[in-house]
Image (tube, rainbow, N blue to C red):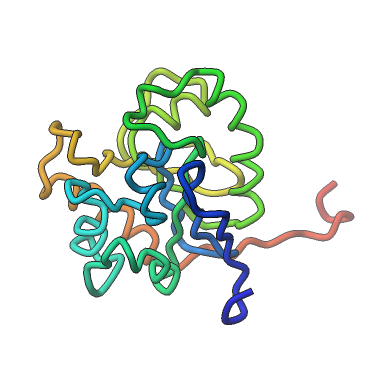
Length: 195
C-alpha cells in the first residue's frame, strides 16, 4: 500500500516490467507486451521513439508530458499501465499464439480485480487474440472485458508508421472524452427484485 492505494509493482528486471495499477482507475492502458528496453529500464514506454507519453498528454490525460522514469505518476491521473503478455521481447511479433492463450484468463482476472472503467488496448493484436475476433475496429468495442468498457487504440510505438502523431492524439482524445464523462452509476438490485 502506498498513500492508501494498492499499487502492483512486480520485481523489476530483464524478465518483467511492473504493472502500474490500483483499484478503480478510469483507464488502464494495455500494451501487447513490454519492450526489452522498457523491461531493462524498469519503466513503461521508455524508448525515445515511443510516442505514448506525448500522445496521452496531448490527448488530455495528463497536464504535463510524463517522463518514462516518472511513469508511476500516471496513477495520479486515474490511469494505469499493464500488458497482456508479461514476457518482454524486441518485437511483439516474437510472441506466440500460445502465450496469448495462456495469458487470457489471468489477464481478464487482473482487469476484473482492479475494476477500471475502461481498458484501452494499444493495437489490435492483443485484443484480437483475447476476443478471438479477426475484425477489430478502432475505438470503442461492443463487448466488455473483465467488466470494463473496451477501446482499441493505435499502438504509439515509433515502429507504427501507419499513424502520425496528430492521428494518435485524435484517437486517444476520443477515449479521454469518454473517460471524462460522468460515469453511469452501477446499481445492483436485491435478489428478490431480479426475478
